[in-house]
Amino acid sequence: MFFVSLFAAARNAFAEWRRRQQAYAELMALDDRSLADIGIHRSEIPAIIEGHRAPREKREREFLPAFTPHKLAGGHTWFPWFPPL
Image (cartoon, rainbow, N blue to C red; front, side, top):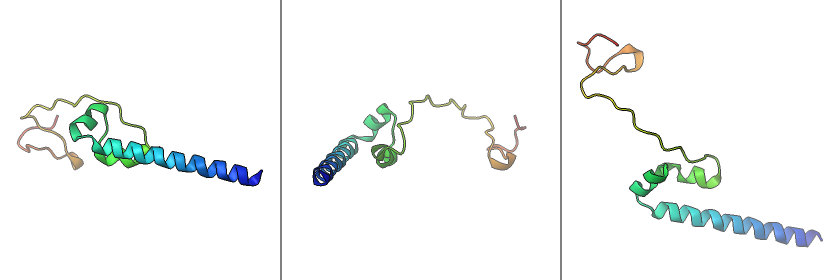
């Protein structure tokens, strides 16, 4: 019975490995625009395939006006001649 269980576990592990390899190949075959449509970046694919990370939810980009001061680290702004917000 031990050898039957060992064989079944090996078969399941191989099937799972093949499933991950196929999913990785299919996601890598997509272009960046298609990946953005489903809410992932190319750099996130390995972590998603391994199950370490779920895909990010699609989020709207924050609108930033072109000529307003944006705060940086340390309280600095892009345009130092504007008063801080």
